[in-house]
Amino acid sequence: MKEFKAESKRLMELMINSIYTNKEIFLREIISNASDAIDKLHYQSLTDKKMKIKNSDFAIFIKTDKNKRTLTISDNGIGMTKEELETNLGTIAKSGSFDFKENNKKKENIDIIGQFGVGFYSAFMVASKVEVISKAYGSEESYSWSSTGIEGYTIKKSNKENYGTDVILTIKEEEEYNRYLEDYEIKNLIKKYSDYITYPIKMEVTTDKETKLETLNSLVPLWKRNKKDINEEEYNTFYSDKFFDYEKPLSHIHIKAEGTLEYNSLIYIPSHASYDYYTKEYEKGLQLYSNGVLIMEKCADLIPDYFSFCKGVVDSSDLSLNISREMLQQNRVLKTIASNIEKHIKNELINMRDEKREEYLKFWEAFGLQIKAGIYNSYGMDKDKLQDLLMFYSSKENKLITLKEYVANNKEEKDIYYACGSSIDQIKTLPQVEAMISKEKDILLCPNYLDEFVFKTMVKYEDKEFKNVCSENIDIDTEEEKEKLKALNENSKDLLDLMKNEINVESVRFTSKLKNHPVCLSTAGEISVEMEKVMNAMPNNESINAKKILEINNQHPITKKLQELYKKDKEELKKYSKVLYAQARLIEGLPIDNPTEITNLICDLLVK
Image 1 (cartoon, one colour):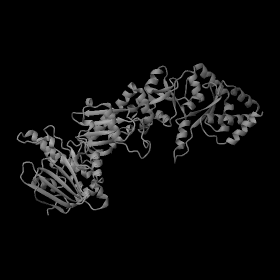
Image 2 (tube, rainbow, N blue to C red):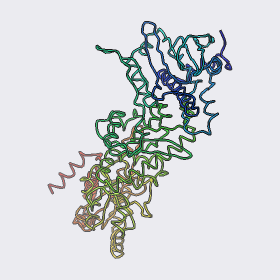
Image 3 (cartoon, rainbow, N blue to C red):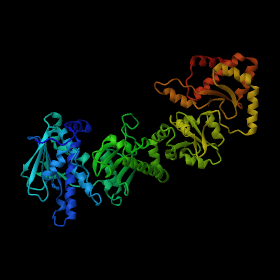
Image 4 (tube, rainbow, N blue to C red):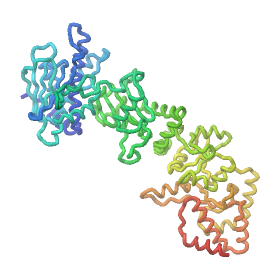
């Protein structure tokens, strides 16, 4: 028995137990090696006119034998000599395919996806013994390489008749490995990992009537076909079969990149969020392939969080089949592909927004929250990428519009006005909103808890600041109105201070920005009433309080009543202060700390 020419036997042990934690990929690795062997023979047949080989006969064959506990993967590729078996299989991480590609890297149309090396040894994760019987094309002799693991290997003559290679795995005895002898499991693994291998993968299938060879793989993936040859139904069927979605996608993006970096990609924008999309359990990512062989089921590094709703595949010949997750995170090729895909997705969404508004509205209903989160979670770093995808409900248009459309519709305004609440209808009834609408101002009505955080993060859009109509800094009065209001508040300072002390707010003042309502709550500083609600609803958070201002409509009869009470009955004024503040809190959807006291005060005032 010969020992492996590796740094140590420990290398194989680490490789089997650590590098490949997912045992089922062994079949992917061996099939990829078989495909490589056929590729080599195919390539030589194109360059050597003396070789008479029918390309249509190329295939990979799978056979199971439950009695012997063997799984055999055979190919009719170039095969290996005794020396090649020794070199390629006797040295861990020695790649015959890699050497072949390096020696011919100036030639075109060489598509080697695997390597006899690290990947081949993944077979020992499921097999107690691995035997490789191979006959090189043009040779009269065949040889068998056999190993039971890290102890070493043997090479001896064999009697294989046809050129090519047979890899015979003796599956381990433990029950957990029995599934690798079941035909249905083999079919599933091929469908999952090797569905798009260039050559047919065939297996004997026995039915009640006959036993026949069945081709298990699809051969040519949809994303490698010419776009002109694919109809919408084929795109949708692929999406449904691949991602198990019963609804058609809103759109698809078919990318074929050529040049310095080559890759194919097929990205879908779903029509609805999956049941777990907005949960911690959801795992984002695109399927990553290397020349049609699955590397990773969900590669998170291919897509940013704010586009995590996208589903799809990416296939690049510039990525190694045996690349690890850690290596992928540092891979320059992957980062370039990810950047290109992000641009394509954004362009497609912009196109939907402008050309297919109904479809974009469906998208926004399903994934608008994710776009907003992309701006907020990045502290505004990604706002330039995402701000033109945002939509908000316009009080003037009575529909969802973009920020660009708001600016175009309100060119005379120096700011972008918005208001937040629990629903569109509730926001419309806010005193400040009602007054602004009466002055023909367009207000963005924001019922989502994240909206105001997004505006605070963005600060501006096209040099226009976002202004909450419920904040103290709304300035829509004329200079004459401002002067009158300033005089009223100065002359009423003692009255207003008494009210402020009674209800414990930042300040109390008269305002001219209300229409019919007697009072409203405004806020000073960065924290609004709606932000207070959201932040206080979060677990393990300290109590947050907005700086509240009680504003009283200077045109409402209540102003005159308060002035009279200040002169005649200050104790009664205190009661009115509490009731008016409670009223303002109720309008804003805030709780009342002392409901019993307030209801008693209301009854007292009613009977007078």
